[in-house]
Length: 218
Image 1 (spheres, rainbow, N blue to C red):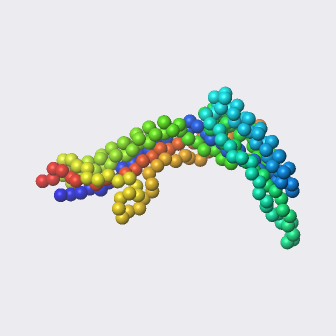
Image 2 (image 1 turned 120 degrees about the vertical axis):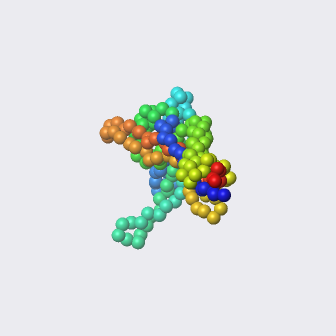
Image 3 (image 1 turned 180 degrees about the horizontal axis):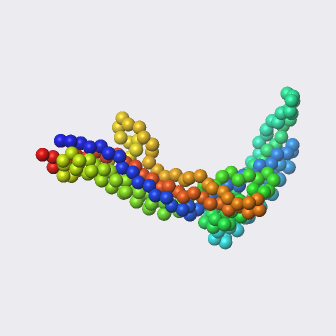
């Protein structure tokens, strides 16, 4: 009886379907109430933008944290003296399906003093992603079977019988990365007057290890 252990994998690259942008607002002032008021004004403005994008169909979802404040110590340059300032902050997140609208908002929001883009997460829709993940898992198993059959043929066997199948990290006494999917880095192109955001494709991947018994050996 001969046992063969093989690795199977599969992956595919798909264009992003959603882009979730985070707008981070942060302003400081010696007076806490003033800092809160200034941030609250910007927060209200960007929440209104977010609602309008969803209403127009350019975005599918928006979310926001409440305005909050904290005290921070600022040291005076070349001395041990310091002063305390009040920092108010808030975030607004919008999930876009319309990437030109996302690019326009990225440029507009990032030009406002006290505002920074916290990041953009590129994704597929949940339904599409689930289907693609299922498909690459099936392909990873098929890859493992084909590998095992090739080895069996090479040593004179006529086929293989699956004994055990493992996802990465689950085989006892072995390491390995957890199977899953990830999003590649964002690509940005454009001039100072116009920014176009072009996400790299999203890679969906799966991997397995499997144990087979070789059949048909004389």
